[in-house]
Amino acid sequence: TFQAPGSGKTFTIGGGLPTNDGTFTSNSGTMTFDSTSTGNNITGTTCGNQYYRLVFNGVNGGWNLSAGGIATCLGDGGMTISNGTVTLAGNSYVATSDGTLDGAGTLTYSGTPLITFNNGKFANSGNWTVYDVQYGDGGTATHTNSGAGTLTINGTLTNTANHTVNLGSKTYIFMGSGTPLSNAATINGDTSTVSFRNATSATIAADTASTVLTYYNLDFSPASGTPTYTM
Image (cartoon, rainbow, N blue to C red; front, side, top):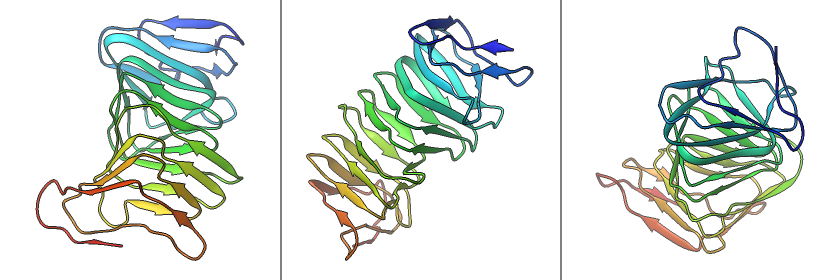
């Protein structure tokens, strides 16, 4: 059994955290990973016994989060990638309640992972690449993204009913086909740039009778080919 640190405390780990051979017990402290090498695996945890706050701060370090195919659930403390690269591994997801995902390091993925925010947000200053993002898992909340880092979404960004997403001043790059941006409530463009660069045709979300979606800077720069964008 591994007991996570309590409130106001930090536990530093120089490698990974493969907990699939034992028991992980949640707490409200910070777990910092500071390895300067790659290949470090961190096993996912179920919601109700989640990691409260994760910090990655190892120059040239690399961590596979949700290794082993077990979904990772993050608490209100969220996740900061100060240095190094975090890879969301497999088809698992990172769920945050009130947590923020931020940092100048790199976030990427393998497989088709889903990041779900109940009441959290992106605040990355580094340039991140993700697959699927969903705002809302029931309830009502407002998500105000911040940070100067670009967010590239290779799958779909979905805003569910009763949730408001403020895009801030970030740049969002959509590479997915079909409907890469889906909105069932309110998305405010603020001063952001939304760029569709998928090489295949796509449907671009717009206002409806029951939803609100505004764009500030809207860009169409396909990576290749001559796709048709339909709004």
